[in-house]
Image (cartoon, rainbow, N blue to C red; front, side, top):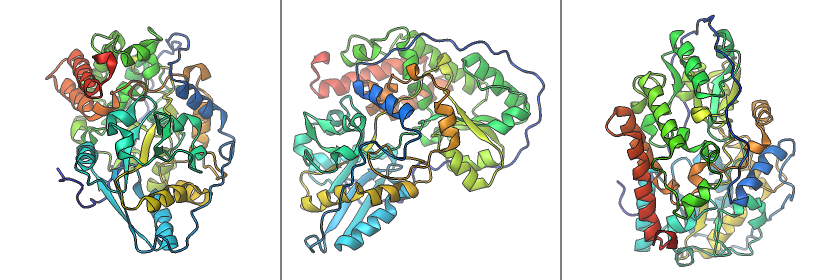
Length: 487
């Protein structure tokens, strides 16, 4: 593990991937097409999830956000000349999309920016060490959401964070995203993130058609049937699952939050008030056991737990896999990386017979460290990245993103596949936030839950133990935070 807040590491974010070629042969058998199961719509108590859902379904044809904020950079009078700005970030949260903007920032003000990129499985420990020891870089990032992520990740933001309340750039963020940046009525963070379908199933539409699969699966049984057809055709990894990344496979459980609320619309509120737990939840047990069954059947590949995402785009391009759980804009990366002429599409993760969209007004969020000796430099940086020029630059240099969820006059790059997919989703099924960001203290134990899922697939623990461990971890965090619901 890296000690303290040491030197920068090479940046290695989620880089979808490569493989080898294998043509899919046609299979004549066709599965039945029962109607999708599921209850009527439900919604969480969090208004931000509804606002985000409205944003997804209502802005596809717009050039950018409706407010069109035009933030201007802080005037350069030489006041920052020679200063150095340090940034602490987890791998995958900045990538190279900020590179050009940071170079312009350095040139504009005569400063130097030092980015310390930490592997995801080490980041939280290192950040906490930095905050406690008073050695934190000028800017740090957390994965934030509207339900207590600031407090659970940072503790008391007044102690550690610069107060940006009243900043000119605040309304560059839509209201749904501002909720992830505010604590106690004060603005501490800046979240610049995309509004694409996030971690849904991207599949090779051409391959499906060749194999006689006429429609995408909407139930677990349909998914199993399709995976069997694909595997029988000679595709050894029907569903690419990069278990070695450590953070990706658990999305199959968490991105389908709405399906858990179908039997109990108040589930999120109950989990947030400690009147319900994960353990013994029948739908959650069903989903975990389905995931294990797919692993047992070899549909993720025999060595999925040892496989990372480095070569994923090539696996698609060379037809060694048929589907994966990725951001929708990954379709663009597959085409650019491999030159494939195959067509691709999307469908919702059908574990648990899910039919809910993964609404998620959350994401990586940057904060200014209150103990910095360069507050003016930090404030200038936050303002600089919120100018229309910087936002357009960040988007244009984002290989995995086709849009930014901002109120600014920028040219978005929505894919036809994205708009086609979103218009197939029932708007009433867009009102429930993903589980990890709709419930307190859950996202804090993302890696631990993922490790438990692998233990489940290896047969060393049962599904309910995975859920019980999450309950114990959430309780530990809640008690440490002084949450009265756990006292």
